[in-house]
Amino acid sequence: MSSQNPVFIPGPTNIPEVLRRACDIPTMDHRSAAFPPLFERAKSGVKRVLKMDEGEVILFPASGTGGWEAAVTNTLSPGDKVLAARHGMFSMKWIDLCQRHRLDVEIVTCPWGEGAPVERFAEILAADTAHEIKAVLVTHNETATGVVSDVAGVRRALDAAQHPALLMVDGVSSIGSMDFRMTEWGVDLAVAGSQKGFMLPVGLAIVGVSPKALAAMEGATLSRCFFDFRDMLKLGTPYTPAVGLLNGLGAACDMLLEEGLDNVFARHHRIAEGVRKAVVGWGLRPCAVAPALYSNSVTAIVLPEGIDGNALCRHAADAYGVAFGAGLGEVAGKVFRIGHLGMLTDVLALSGIAAAEMAMADMGVPVTLGSGVAAAQAHYRATKTDPVRAA
Ligand code: PLP
Image (cartoon, rainbow, N blue to C red; front, side, top):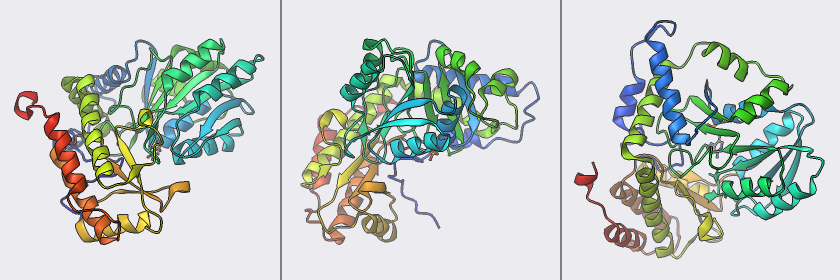
């Protein structure tokens, strides 16, 4: 039986009851007149969450990985050069996907815990006077390390070099939880998934596509079928749509927009700050190497030498019924991750912090019980909002 506790993994998130019910609707004929308003509501809601003034939102029955593939295959051709940084599991996997599609990836390798290297990108783009680079890939929020990258900075680097490459951004674990500005940042392809900031079950790949990316689509020759934007744009739903999830997506966007995106981001920041205070209280440190890189949706915490983060996560699940994120790739075993995105409150965050503290103490991490909880409590008390008035 699953635990009654909330999860503290960095997605899928806990699903608010109202969204769970919005997904659980009777079967609808997607060719009936009832479907288009439901579909339009979801797409227009996503446009507002992405802060998109122009372009298209395309929704696939897939996970975020499908969104990566859709972005790449619809706008690029075999052998095209793309620029990407490898600084965590997800940036690494997106690079792997590009390579399997026979793209020529210029990889900038950075230590895990750092963000996209904006200055290095600027140098490479400025030197590419023949404009061989067709796309720059940025993982906005590296979920493996809890690191946020400066997408606006990458846009500035492209503009400074007067470089026409497409800007593709993985916002799978940032969009809906952290500020994202598709049009203002000149993002050409933005990828999200239903199970993170949108707080839904997994099952939708969400892709924002700029007018420039739509123009690139016309000449792109990488093969695509299931993920072909052209079919989506021409037919709306070239195959059976995930109607329940789309209904949930409309409701999720309404929920985010009703709270106000700035309030949603401020709430995530406040909850995340409490988690980070707890980390300091434990005498530990985040994997992200500088405060400007701290993610507001997930914190990866570096464990002392000799403590296995994966064993810690297993223990937390077995002993307390609480799920934390294990370390991935290069930081597997060295970190554990507390996911703090979606509909969390400070009270829920405190329960996760308390459970992490117990699990660490059990595993021999020299933490004083209560130290992290007290540090987070102090932060939440000092920054409290009136939950009744806020509701
Ligand atoms: N990108 C990031 C930043 C992620 O965190 C994830 C999954 O956690 C993915 C891409 C892949 O998404 P999915 O697992 O939905 O395919």
